[in-house]
Image 1 (cartoon, rainbow, N blue to C red):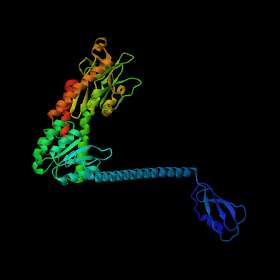
Image 2 (image 1 turned 30 degrees about the horizontal axis):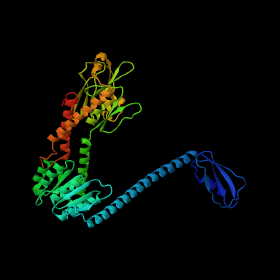
Image 3 (image 1 turned 30 degrees about the vertical axis):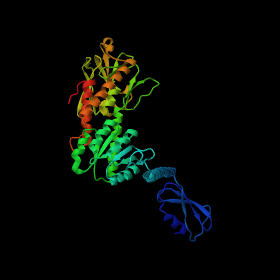
Image 4 (image 1 turned 180 degrees about the vertical axis):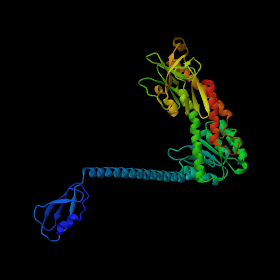
Length: 458
């Protein structure tokens, strides 16, 4: 077989397209045509000599192959970009944290060199930029206060420390603190007396008690006089920071609850507020005394739903039970029900009529109700049978705004009353903050439904 024929036959060319080869010595080009998977034809521009030569095949890439390559490059580029972006963010965050730590350590070093004896004989103060909270710690053991300063300053807290309870009381009269940390057993004035005095002079300050295992019962006693919580010695750095961060969250939650909610009238030019402390009241919609709303459509039917006051107070809706289609409902009868945990709250109808349409989406996704815009949170449509008379009991516009303010005041009184009856699980050393909060929330919900809605079924 001639060398060229042997070379061509050994290719076993698997492609359905043409290729080219070049004779290296003669600089001649030839085309290979793939007539089939095993038969090849040659177009030679000239006769090649019967000597040995090398055959170089140049495949012509297909359009599909080029597209795959472009797609692969794009995917790899995106992945590399994400990895680089993530790594850069981590690097910058770490660098920022190291910078903050260095600044706080410098503030600690400077603070310990300053003299504040004119305010209190044993006072040592360390202030950081934009602190998470301001703390006053009182303990008769200097080594404990040293630990507090080193741990909490680096964690982002400003801290004053004194060794006597009387000095602490003098400072809270002059300065604003978020927390007072007090040791339980101290000479002259112990932690229980400090707690009582602080809550009397500055009820806005939260008190944390430092205690040993042997005095836990006394620490629990301080919670009856207003202490937020207690921390047990000894503790590690991570334990103290974690404990303090939880206390900070509890404080912010308490302050937010004490803030008086506002009422926001929604007009075509005003957007709804997503804040839990701001209740939206759309203009042109009727509000029922049981906090359902009624929107009269152009065809005369009425859409009915629960108002923002209910949605944001209950917060989590786990299930909805809607009325049956074509059901005839009288005003005051149960129209639909809301499920929250194990509670089933029946909502009475604000008007009489026949149920014509149901919003079944709420049955499938009840969790959407709390986040949906007002007009999409409707439960059902009712064809009114006595609307002209029943509208007189509904509120609209400015009248509803003033009424909501009265309802908010009433609700705040209920919350304060329940919280006084349910101190933060001070009855047991092995307290469970989550269980205590759930118990308080349950009692608030019970009082809320009895006062503002229909009586719940359990």
